[in-house]
Image 1 (cartoon, rainbow, N blue to C red):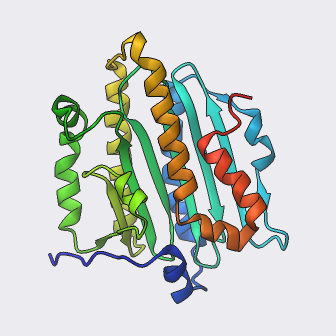
Image 2: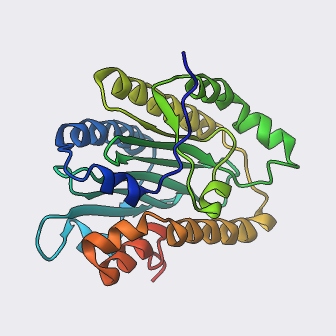
Length: 266
């Protein structure tokens, strides 16, 4: 199969090229995948809805055309979990998240997942590392080598074009086995995305059956590092420009704060 060409256009550029694609059915299919994964998470963790996001369930633009939903959770093992969607499903753009940031008691990587339409399907799945992968080779082999085969397989799959962010920090935040693609919506590609999503979630939950502990003395520094990365990813995401376009700067700033849990400790 032909090796796909990487995509380097921005979200805004991709949407502006094809602004009127009705993606409601695609959105529904992708949201169902996140719902299936969320059911597995609910079956594994004790989670509590956080009041700081209660007013974002749902929210909408002043004209009512753009909508969204953002729910944040915490728990004994979970520092911050976000389950959310945003967009205009009947006019090209949607984005949805299931991001799970663990507490500092374990070194297991965090779980990051985003799906959406630009208007083709956007796929992002990764384990956010909590160690230097250039020097901690045991960590690299334990958590990232198992993803390498599926990463290489999709890199060779001509249906999936690697999505390369123009933003340096967003590229820096991804591991070298990160799944990040654009792909045309078909029954087959959605089935592949579903299979990959469950594979990523099941592997991650398996690590947490016997989690690698963090020494107590190292936990404060790890928690500080986690929050720094979570905030930087949320604040530097180029997709925030789409939020400003749809909802204005004030509400977008509020959504960004919710994504990184700015108010979770209040």
